[in-house]
Image (cartoon, rainbow, N blue to C red; front, side, top):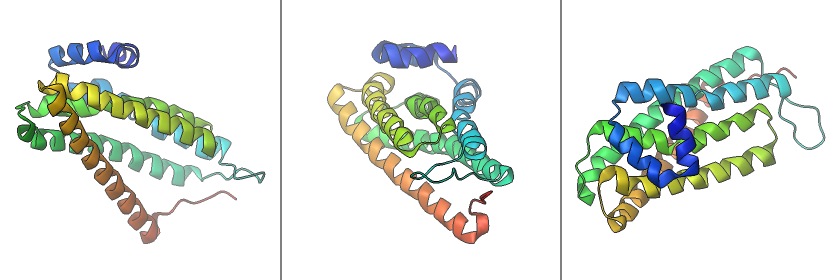
Length: 200
């Protein structure tokens, strides 16, 4: 079950990767039972935080988004995460042969999906939009995501630790490029008139 894997990735990640590898989850099942559920946490939390609580900068009044604007951003954010997992899975599959692995595309997407678990779960903190808190939790989640990547690749891809280290480093680089690309698309969309609308 998906939530057993989530708990296992936090409590005993190395054993949990072995269990995930043996499960042989399809792309559709992985998305329906894991990605679609957990990827909803950050946008839903951010929607609530941005419309009900509001961002506070310094000692000023909280700044809130309109419901319509926040909903558009939340939907776009959710879709971006679904696409991002698939892109990372494809990238892992494409790079695998270089490091002596021949995994299926399904296994690569499952690896990408479960590696992103800390980022999905930590998104819950956006319901309380305080910049320093969200940044602190986000950085901790990112660090644990990197740890999961480095422990997961040797087990899921069936490569040595040395090959896994190089492979994971390459995947991490691709992930950073994808993130920068998503930020660039966001900036372009905002410039095209899809910028957030505030209530005050």
